[in-house]
Length: 115
Image (cartoon, rainbow, N blue to C red; front, side, top):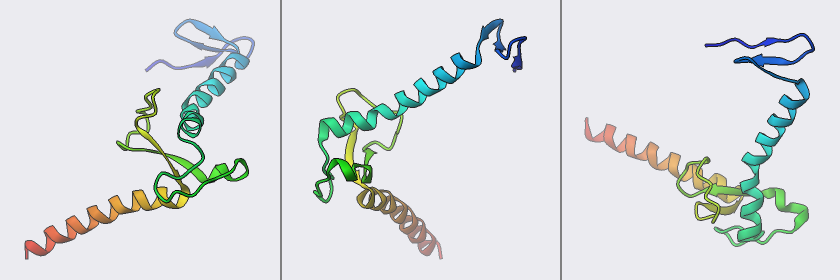
């Protein structure tokens, strides 16, 4: 594993390349924006409505809408939005809780059959 070290003028050196602190910060900000862009894309594509309960949202409360990845992989963000559905925070929590409950009940059922 290669180590990073500060150069003469506060720049970071890695594999012989030199980047200023400003360049590094700019790259990190751009990477953060790119990972969150799918939320805005989904809200624009699917509208400000929860796909599960049908509640409609306005701009002032759009923060309550989340993007649920249908296949469970948050890195799978196809540009056509086919893996996304907008869910309100309550329905999103319910969606993930159902999976946990199902896993728990399956495990409990296996344990009782072994007795």
